[in-house]
Length: 209
Length: 70
Image (cartoon, rainbow over all chains, first blue to last red; front, side, top):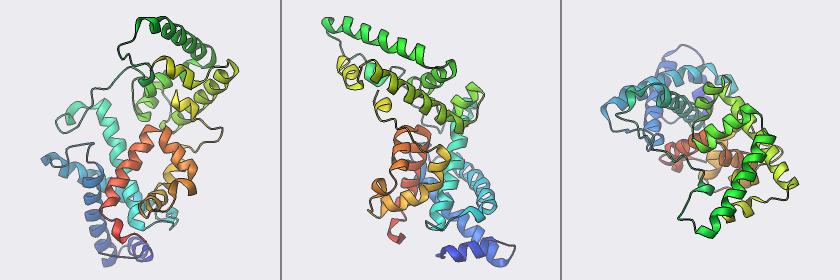
């Protein structure tokens, strides 16, 4: 099953007995990779996992063959192939997590904490409460003044509600890849505004610690 | 707040990070200075939960194969 990158590329490029053998080997390698890589995401020992993994690998194999020309050769071919297979699997699992509850039996779903970690209330002392409220009001005002509605919605979804980029993108009717750019712009605006207001994040966090 | 602190003017997009993720993982697994060699990948992984999830999954998947890495 060990092949060099060149051997993988040659075997996968056209219909031949070598092609079929390479696809069969790669399928086996990728299923094993999903079993290791998805530990903690799904129950990989559940009976349903086998067919789920087969579906992911089938889709991944199509993508891999389609994208062969883009493989730059800077890693082992199998590392590149695992990357694509895991991306296919995780994208689908994220989608299913919020669209389709049929996998609940084998999905590990966290309860989620809807309080920002820096603002989590750890038995606040009374003298801190006023200061906390003031700082929160100030931060909320900066967010309200500095960010667009869409940036605020994305920030809330990703940071506070811990939704995935794909889910947030669907909520905001935009492409998943654009969500990161939207949030980057939002973070940058807040960073500049905090600096302009003379507020440091360390100060803010210290009020809540 | 930490995320705001760690925000840089220039950050990789998810696509740019994904394109380099296999190389970054191999550098990480062979004890080379992946973060020093590819700081923008490390920075993006620290900021983007979805890409971090893909990095961690790929790391788990590759750890069983690391002895064969160059």
